[in-house]
Every structure is written in structure tokens, then in C-alpha cells.
Length: 173
Image (cartoon, rainbow, N blue to C red):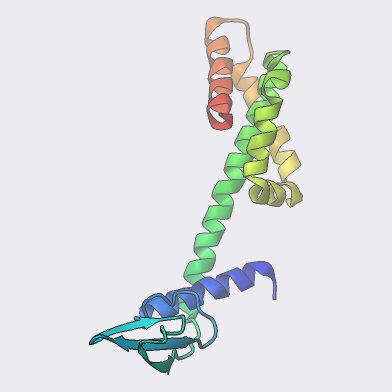
């Protein structure tokens, strides 16, 4: 089973647990022990053993029903949407960082530490992006479009270049 399918199944099991109304058991894949503690006329349900001064009985939480195909599909769709969003952010920031390094000779040296830290905070998404065989070409294509959009020595082109770099700086900080 792939990691993605495991995560989808785990999330779906959590949804199923919540749907059957077992409090505090979201995400439980196997049956667990629940303790009923009665002390001074009060009843408390908990996952730990009862204090020695309380009367204890145990309950078995039933296994969660397997997730429905609709639940699995919903979790997969949510995961796919997040992956697409992550890809877009990584592509935009990477493109912008490289473009700003072209626009401003000192940009890379001033912001490489922030860029590396940002990459570390987004390591999983960055790794998935880097593993995508189309990502390198996508960044090159985005850079070419940005060059075309920001070409020239006039004030409008300069403002567009500054806007690209301002967006990158905002994300990195």
C-alpha cells in the first residue's frame, strides 16, 4: 500500500469513526479499551485505568466501519487539490526567486537564506515538486513568460519586475 493510499484510508477511517459518534476516537483503526470509572456517584469514561478508589469496568470500542467509496474519493480529491495548490506555490516562488536573481544581481545573496528556510518549511511539497518530471520545464516556461511580461527599460516593465520580487519577498519572510 502506498503512503498516499495509507493516508487516505487513515483519514477515511477517522471520518467513519466520527460519523458513528464515538467521542474522542477519530482516527482509531483498531478496537481499543475504554474504562468506565464510577467514584462518588460520578461516572467518567477514559482511555486510562481508573484510580484505585473508583469502581472500574471496561468497554470495548467497536472497530470502525470501513470507509465508503465516497469517503475515500472525497479524501483523495481533497489531497489532490492540496497537492495542486502546493505545486503552484512552489512553482511560483521558485520561478520568482530565479527571476529576481536575474533582475537584481544581489538578490540571490540577500535572500538565499530565507529561500532555503522557506524550502525547509515546505520540504514535503518541495520534494514532491522536485520529483515531478514536468516541474523543471514548467519553471523554465514560467520564467520565459515572466521575461516577456517584464521586458523593457521603461517604468512599466520596472514596476512589473518589482512586483514579482515583492511577491517573492513576502512569501519568504
